[in-house]
Length: 146
Image 1 (cartoon, rainbow, N blue to C red):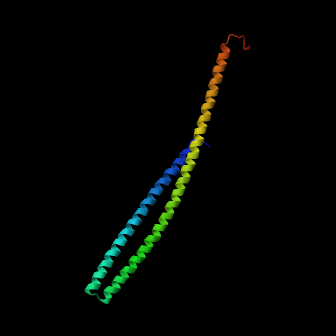
Image 2: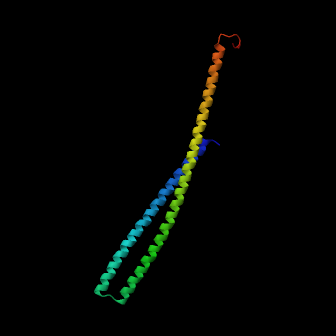
Image 3: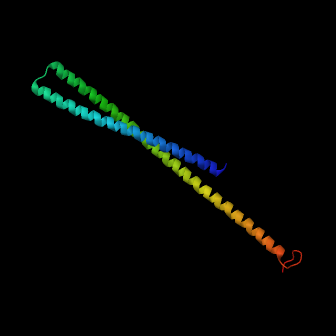
């Protein structure tokens, strides 16, 4: 199979891996942003709870706040799990991208070597043609050499 065709395929694989890595990076950033927002809301809820406790609160209000805290903790754990999964997927995609880049570079080298070999063959053929023409134009008789 032609190295140029394989190289084009390798470039496509590399581009796909880059796009997928960018998408994963974006998803990871969104998860981090959601975690920051959740932490901010949890701090606001805690401050609000402390204010209610100072002013006096009912048992229902305390239980309501404890339920909200439990939900926030569960949401935080879910986001941490999602973050770990996304980070693992990113590392896997980085490894795939690195592999695709190395494969393309190998094919680049093979393509360059093939082009160099083709150029050398053409130069040898050109030199042979020049040698043959020079030999035919020489003043020797009918192909005799001195």
